[in-house]
Image 1 (cartoon, rainbow, N blue to C red):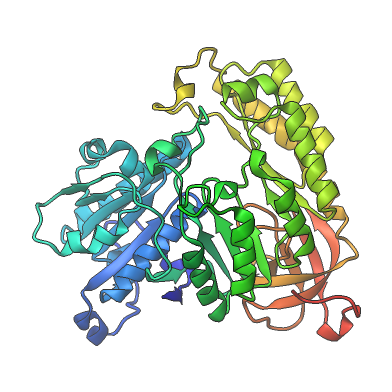
Image 2 (cartoon, one colour; image 1 turned 180 degrees about the horizontal axis):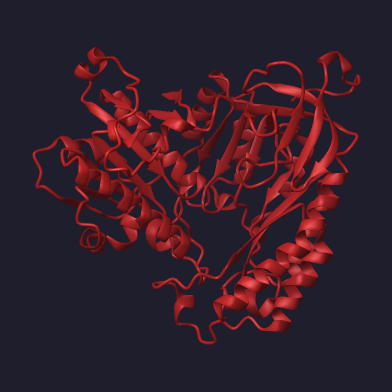
Length: 487
């Protein structure tokens, strides 16, 4: 079951004023009387966590609960946490504290904390935040409502081994708008990157079956979804763990046969498994977007070795060449870590040289986060935080004009833009074209004199680059060149 939900209903609007009154109720007294209760959810972290939150919301609705955006209206306050790096943990703990404060003001409310931070710290999180009523680990969402409704002790700690990714028949409320949805194809990770805690939190890689994913994408597109975004911790590893061994290429072929979605996007492609067969399939299938999100993490061979990554400088160079040779219109996005233990000025310079040489379209940069429980935590020669931050700024300063130059090639082109929102500040509609992934890349600002429907494709003539965004004029469909299609 796939339903749609406005994003505002997912993330609670927090007001910590002790004298605050609940907002105007969105439900009638009769609806409230017939419901089991009201629920508000804060979803933090990555797109995989978004899917988990959507499945929680779907279960609540199926069982007779009502969803609210105002925490003062919510009987159940749910925080789905992220515990990947220090910044994510800090944000999660701040959100827990905010909800705990509201619970102190209104003691009848229950505070439920789920996700990676719960999985990481377990009972220690209850000690740090004693206002928590129910602590649930990553992926245990089928037990959430039964535990809440059971005659249980005042505080319940239910953190066990992480479950597999939920199947398509789990009810899910889509929070990413009418036209775009994440599809989590697997749970967990088999890689051993020394900086990463995820395998300990999410367990080994467990693929969903081909049939299960095919059923979900068919359902999503039947309900009007135009963009399917395949996500997992390592999307290229898909199918290798199944009893009948499969592959990402086989999955993509099955998805193409199962639905009519015009945009099929893949995120989190591990570099060593981006092979010729996959590149050839993407090159010949128009609906498979030639958008390559490949987290490289670094370019210096010694740093990559300390990270316990398989690739080296020459292999990442060759990968960029192979992608562009096989898929000439490819968009390349990557993320990098600076300040990894032992990273010297010379090793950082190797990364800078690679960035200049490779001319990637989109780049994200993180400073190394020293996480207890990872192999890198015990490595010597830690880089000072101020040095790491300066390196991040230097790398982004190098990349920004590269991204702008890469975007310039779209000026004068007509592109199909998926309309997603209206920007009050700039008085224009906002959307994305195929080379922009949601949340992490730029957008297209659409100049027009008419009201646009959300979730549709419109033709836009790109006129200029504005930072990381593009700006363009709305065209009539009749203005498209004969060989142009909207999707």
